[in-house]
Length: 274
Image (tube, rainbow, N blue to C red; front, top):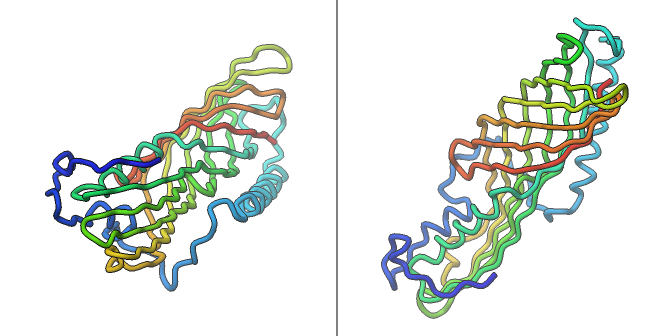
């Protein structure tokens, strides 16, 4: 998307005076401190190897669920028993597109000319957990999940405060671990099908890798690959249909992220209860 020159007064800037604050925030400079030790991982293409990582994590989680099922040995009809479950998850873009748009708009504050483009991507993940069967229709327990992406953002643009113009590019990738307390109520439709309402509340650790570069009049900003961690509350509501042990459903998911680019989105999942 291309943007015409903006009135800096709308963003609190002064026309004709360079103000890099929006760009610095977009590029990750001035964000909460890097909590990783050692050298941060190099940035990678947003889609490259994503499915391989998710599949690898899914295999590990599925094996963990299988081992738990052998230990728990829950039967399908018994109450007062524990049994594991697992799922593959997709998370849509949600409000991250609007967040990226607002951040890019702020970059143009005070500029005589500004143009940019940005792409936003959702995420894929897997989780494994264990439920306690309180009665025939109600279960509670917990889960551990991994999300590759969510949201990932790739943007670039050109800004003119004075000749020569400056350009920048930025790619933000995210990986998230989630620990949830979950509960699920089931409503039997017939002998084969059930309608479920699930809910979860817990904690998410988002590991964000930011690869940025700049040139021209913006060259003083430099380039780099800073990495930051954010650990905040997360929640979800998950209606689904179950055919015996298999489930398919949607999720409405929220990530507080301490008010720093909070993310709310809708996704889908395929699950299985052992």
